[in-house]
Each structure stands twice: as C-alpha cells, then as structure tokens.
Image (cartoon, rainbow, N blue to C red; front, side, top):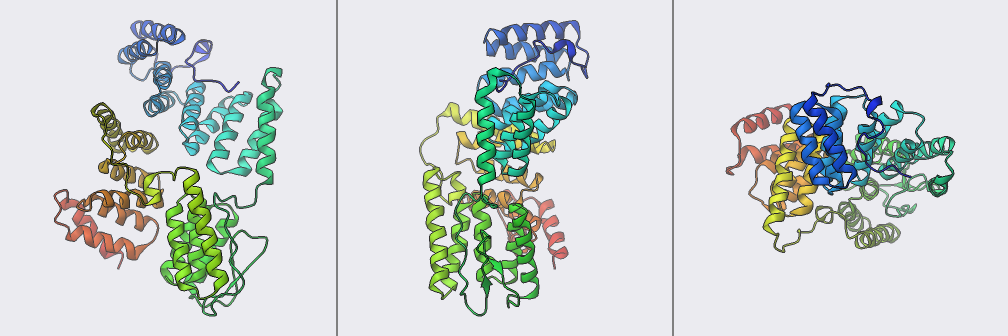
Length: 452
C-alpha cells in the first residue's frame, strides 16, 4: 500500500491543466514518463525539465520532475517541485499527494499534514490519503486529529491486500488513546507540594505539570501568564504555552514554578538543553529538597533522551558541530541547497526554503550562514523560539556576525521578550562588524523606540 511517489501515468486524462502543454512539452513529458517507469531517473528529470521549458507552469511536468528528484534522494528539490505543481494547478490531486508523502518522509510533518488535508478534500474517497494524513498528524503531535484520521482511514479501507496497514492503524489508535494527556518526550515529574513560601506551587496528581496555587506572590502579570500557559498546555498547544511561561519568567526570573513549567514546555518541544538549563536554575533557587529532586529527575531523563536519540540537532544540545573535514563535492552541494533556500526566502516561500536549508546543514553542519538563513525562514513561519536557537548557534560558530544579532532581536520581539529584543537591537546598532547594514541599523533604532 502506501502509495509511492508517482507521476501521472493513469491519471493524465483526468487532470485539468493550468497550463496547456505545447506539442514539444507534451512530447518531452511523455519521454519523461517512460524514463521514470524504466527507473532512468536522471534521464526522466532532463525530459521533464525540457517539458517545463517548453511550457512554463506545466503542472504534470513539475510533478514528474519532483518524482524523478525524489527517486534520486533529493528530497528538498523534489518538495519544491511538487509545491510548484500545486501552485500551478491547485486542483491537481496527485501533486498534493506527492507533496504530502515527500514532506512526511522528510519528517516535515506539519507541511505534510497541510498537503494531505488538501488531497483528502480533493479526493475524499481515497483511503491512502487519510492514512498519510493520520501519520502526519501523529508525527506533528496532533494526537486527537491523528486518531480521527486513522478512524476515517479504517472506514474507507476495504481492500483485503491492505490488512497490514489496517492493523497498523488500529495499533496507532490504541497507542494514541492510551497516551497521557500531555505526551512529552521527557517524562515530566510533578513538582512537590512543598515549595518556598515566596513561590507556592500546588500539585494536581492528574496533571503532568504543577498547577499554580491561588494567592502566589509571583506578581499579577507573571501569575496571569502562568495561568495562560497552563490553559494552553491543557489544550496541547505546547509552543504557545512555552511563550506564556517565558513571559512569566520575564516578569519574575527567580520564580520556581514558572521556570519549572518553562522547562517542561521546552522538553515537550524537543529542546532538551534549554529544558535542562531551566531545571538547573530551579535546583539553584529552591531550598526544598523534593523540588530539587524533581528537577534533577527531569534533567536525568532529558539527558538520557538526548543520548538515546543521538541528541537531535547539535544546536539543540548546545554543542559545537563536528569539526571533521567536509569533502569539496559535499560542500558544493551544501552551498547549492543554501543558495536555493535563500532564493526561496526572497520569494517568501518559507516552507520550501526550510527544506533546502535543512538539507544544506545536514551536509555542512558548520555552515554559519545556513543557520542565519534558517533562522530567517523560521521567523517567516512565525516559529520564533526555533529561530532564536539557530541565531544563537550562528553566534556561537562566529561571534563576529551581526546578522545573527539582528535576527535574535527579531525572534525575541516575536516572542514578546521585549527586554531581550532591546538588548540585541542595541548590540546591532552598536556593532562595527563587516556585515552590518545601515538600513537595518536604522530599523533597529526605530524598533528600540517602539519598545520603550
């Protein structure tokens, strides 16, 4: 089952083209289809490119080129072509399916889910689309939506040959239903009931994180932000909860409850080193042995998770990248992905740019400009916390860069961490680095005025 990436083949006659192919484009496309069917992927890519040159915006050829590139393990380039096909013809079902499949195999689950949502709306009778949608929701952490999509798949799947996938769907439903309300990657320890009198925290045994006790002295704004974070956490909006907890910490940097919960939210999002930093501060601030033990247990689990998974990306571990040599051919390929990503950023095609830049940094993990560019992409996607991690890592690699200073200021402003934003705007304004841009210094001054 699980449809593999395909070109048109049997669906060609059913497709409505946004751009009618010229005879030359159609001939080249048919040549590409034949080469793809014969597993001659490079030859297929050349033929599809010829078809696109003959008729720009020819959606089936763009989709075919994506298939040929994906078969060559060029996922980032393939995704860009599939997306281009959907833009050329938004009603082109097959391109949406292929986009979802390629994004899912690249672990870009939110993008995959969006593509499968489009596909299942266009073809609500195809069980395969709902299976892919369910897998994407599960990968993105949207468990309730995943369960619904799996159940829809089971209602629509009637092929005896698909029993393996029917069983897998049922297993996934059972696993997701049995999961705790807040399925954090790190098992979060509930803070104990006894905490310093200045920072009271009550516990709810049914809750994965501490719940604030009424009458706490962390300040009205900070208490409101903690309550807001708790509400978002209960709704499984972990990233938004992290912003609220961060605001609470900004209001009172020494509040144990806010720091503990901010660590929890970072752990859920996979930023283990940041979670460890917050729990370490809890250990330093709290005189209560049971609170210290709760934080220590979480730190141990986070460290074990990092070791088990290989640590994720090096910047998430706050580690330097590998210092071994990079082959010149690999370096060249990394720069090509980087340049393609930058070009997509200028077109505001941030989702595609992210795929390119991810590929670039896999090939050359010490490419400082890659982290800066990816930070800009993440800001374009409003993923400010992740952008800040990339900009911080770029500064660690090259402390003399000014563009990362400006990027950090923008990321912190997006998170409403205004004190941090001001600090980095000021550093950018005062910078004499070679890459400083006068127009951005002027912009930074204006934003400093706005943040006063």
